[in-house]
Image 1 (cartoon, one colour):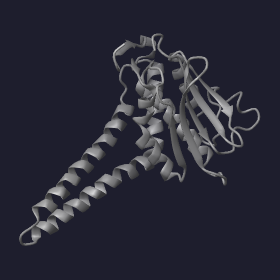
Image 2: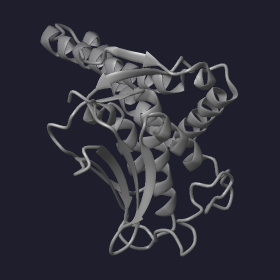
Image 3: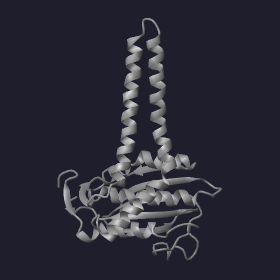
Image 4: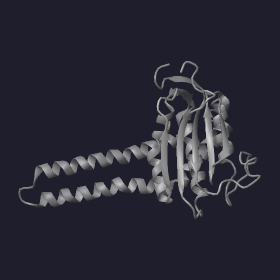
Length: 255
């Protein structure tokens, strides 16, 4: 199959106009809303740089015999920072759209890398160290990129919330790997307290939440997305402390 070529559209039951489709969209918008502080911080950096370079241009032009090389460099920096800000907005718009679900043949690592900036910014805002370990040479998978990114953002948010009042190491790791079963895995592991006894059995139940103000819908919706892709969302404890939520996805038959 050609790179990122459409492989099919999900059935009407999962389309943007259905109840299930609307729930997925609302859940994705809620996740983006929870990332607002990180997004604002990420956008503020290029905007501040643009303002600083623009002020430098004004100062240079006010001097007799302005150095055109310096002006050119400052203008190039303004253009580069504008592109950076535009890329952030484009990623958010892609995640926020309620398009028809499209499954495409793709490289799993690129799905993760595409939102790395958002993930890293969210981690920094919460004082958490995020590391990515993406296994090279993974077989291709057929998936809806935005939906899998939605699940990844949800798992990342859960990890950040688990570490919110944690006094130990504050770390999250995202790792991709090829399993002996022939499936690929995305694992999101945090160094927090992990799930209490009895919570692991219920954590994917609708409306069950370990958070004081949680809706209990994030993980069930994420689990539904994984199953719609022929895979599964699961949990395992992490040693010595922490939780690991993973997505297993089938590889393409000819991969």
